[in-house]
Length: 427
Image (tube, rainbow, N blue to C red; front, side, top):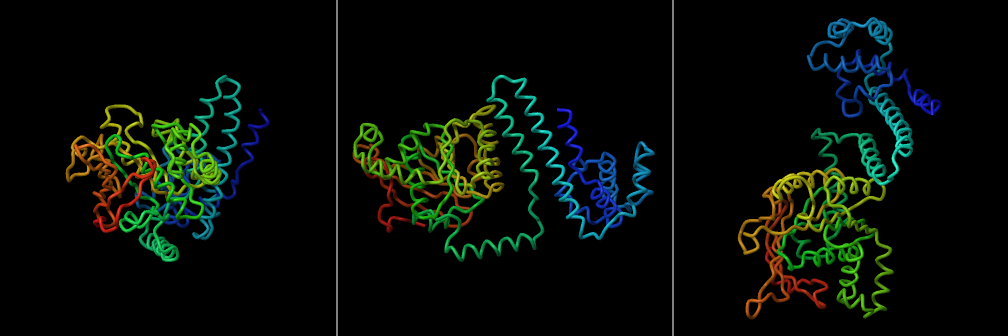
């Protein structure tokens, strides 16, 4: 183990560290180019860390980064810092090399952290008998290390415009926005599953939230080539979710499938969906765990659309208002961070369950404020005031386009949904 620990000290490039610090002293503005790449902790040499942090302090004071000012704010005035500083002042390079140097230093830093972590993990395995808490902790810590290796997006308007032009080019080529929805009414409304967007679909109990989830999933795979979908189900088991999808695809009620009815169609559809890039998670109820799993999915396999069914079952501290108000910006953040669309199913507040003009999801108004697309499902009533097989899908909020409604209809013994006549669509 001692030999392994010594290996850490070989993962370095002190000459590059010296060159970068010399470059900063000679060309202080290059700090702006590297601030999103490294921090003082990424340097191997402690003296390099101290000088880098001192340079930042001086730069923020808007004074010259030179030997005199570094010594002025070097509180301890350590002799070894003075000697080290003197030796690196002349080792600077051209300012355009600062980014290259910073990335090399960051790369070495990440490798040291990963190597140190593998040693720590070995010690944990020796001490801990139960492996599950070790694995959970390891996933979180490793993802944190991995995420820190990625450069932040450039926030300059020129860079943003260039990214936008690239997106417009992709949109023009694909004749759509993001993944195709496969449902004309929603396509006319929002265009597609736009990466970075948050949809929230609300409905009262037994209105068809889960049925709509698998109607949308079915149409994603029908309309797109090799889409990647991730489902977090806080209500049904993973097998129950697959049963709902098979029921949708075959028009056979779930209980009938379990009894062996329409077996040939079920087997054929099961073979087809087994080729889908579709993952269903049924055992995560805390947002922190859902977040880690989504980030892991993005890194390892990629993900285009995430479905969460449904929000109010996500547990956390405080009242339902506390949980939902905190959850709203976190879902927004995740959608942007991993560049996917999140479609979250929600219960409705009592006011909206009875009808109304306001978009009110159960728990907190922050949910309505956060979503790009806010939809409610409203079951129509037939004779005697009982629910019939028609459902109004009402787009009450659309940050990017029109609002309106379209009429859906349960078909095949409530296993699927279809649009009614297009002349009933109002946008």
